[in-house]
Amino acid sequence: MANESVISVVDPEVEFEVKSEAKSESKSEASPEVDPKVNNDGYEVVHSKSPLFYDLYDRKAELKHQTHYCPGCGHGVVHKLIAEALQELGLQDKTIFVSPVGCSVFAYYYFDVGNVQVAHGRAPAAATGIKRSCPDKIVISYQGDGDLAAIGTAEIVHAANRGEKITVFFVNNGIYGMTGGQMAPTTLVGQKSTTSPWGRRPANEGFPLHMAELLATLEAPAYIERVALSDNKNIMKARRAIRKALEIQRDRTGFSFVEILSPCPTIWGKDPVEARRWVLEKMTPTFPLNVFRDRRPEIPAGNEPPQRPVADVLGITPKAGAHDTSKRKHAHHFRDVKINIAGFGGQGVLLLGQLLIEMGMREGLEVSWLPSYGPEMRSGSAHCHVCLAKERIGSPLVSHPDVLVAMNEYSLRKFAHEVVSGGIILYNGASLPADFSAPEVQVVSIPAAEIADKLGSTKAANIVMMGALLEETECLAPGTALSVLEDMVKKLDLLEIDRKALTAGRLFIDEQAHLGAVSQPDGFA
Ligand SMILES: Cc1ncc(C[n+]2csc(CCOP(=O)(O)OP(=O)(O)O)c2C)c(N)n1
Ligand code: SF4
Image 1 (cartoon, rainbow, N blue to C red):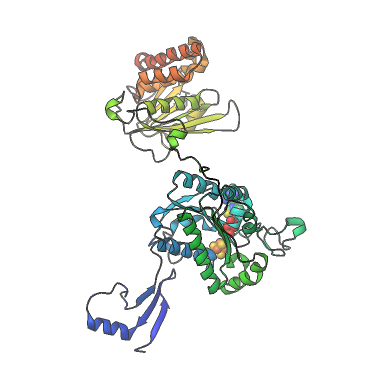
Image 2: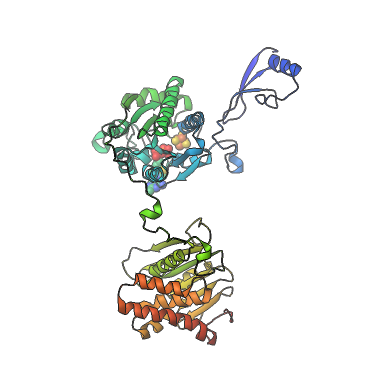
């Protein structure tokens, strides 16, 4: 055995090693230094996992030895080919991978690149947004046939038709894998699925959709090829196509699309070898392998989409000096404040949130506003999450607010338990419901609707609450509130009421809340 080379697969995820005793002996004689290509067991590593993949795929303890793909699944092969191509082209740090809904939903566990996981079928739309806002990045839309050719048909057709400079890898396994084998638009005629147990019948389910051919009828795409993971020769062709598609994006040539016929042994009920054969023998007659498009699209010059900063497009360009803390109108005593404003539609719940973020922006803070409301036009429940922060906001979602503004009893009961310990609840009501208790937070009842009514419009109850909020938390300056109201409220009579409502809310906290409106514990101010 001394001169015999042994090839073994030690890691199920790919580490081919060659053991050559003669070689390692002579090496150790020549030099005691450790050769990085020889591992601890004396095996020479001749092929290993792409460094573009994470070292560790985080999995549950009992599944640690395997990826989440079934043995023989084509997704693993496609992942490997994409990783190798990105590595060879030196694009790892520039790549943003958009993963779909389907078996490959967890692609972000494997690729050590920027990752975004999107809703079913929306990958080309999300990729469009990412590419347009980050034109120097390499943006990959990775999709199955259910994702791309069923629920996402519109997205892919329009992204291709616009000639977005993204790369789409379309893994066509002729079936819905993740959900257990329903018919896909690419299911073959006669092929059985859980939703066509008799086999696909064109008279009932139509013919298989040829996505590569369909997209090739459009003018904009630069590159469209169909390849197959049926045997080594074809896998090498797939490798070249994947690399070429990425080069096309790197060179800013245009939209590139590779359809990859791929085995799904589990749902097809075949072993991995049979499944590969099935790709060649059954799929390629329906989906011929071909380069359908390879040309630089002729797009009239000067037709590029405008590249403007997002803030500019939204018209929220910060005013000069807004980020200069020395010029801030208000010394903020907090790092961030998270607020949930909840009530019925029509109570100005969402507007109150918008006023607060406008004030925050004017005071140079980072802000976010996340509305949530039901389908009813009026009177349905509505709430919005508001974040005011000195640093960038990671997520606009507020699970545990510092402050809850509850405009009605329903919202009080629904959201009170979410408020952080030591937080504040401002309740629009003369008194709290008898059985309500929130021992760990300060609760203030403010008869905002009544106050607003006396001022001339119940609609101003939200502004009364805003005054109370500003006075209680001192998170923003009342002067900023006034200037925002003056800019945003167009009707003069309403503006006058709002001004009074703002003052009334503040005065209520200063002068009356101590006299009995605080439920528990007292002395919050
Ligand atoms: C909006 C929406 N509709 C339906 C589903 C259910 N669903 C999850 S994956 C999937 C199809 C996956 O098939 P495919 O895109 O071919 O990917 P594969 O799993 O075969 O790789 C469907 C219908 C969903 N998650 N979201
Ligand atoms: S069900 Fe099919 S597509 Fe999904 S992981 Fe298994 S083999 Fe792959």
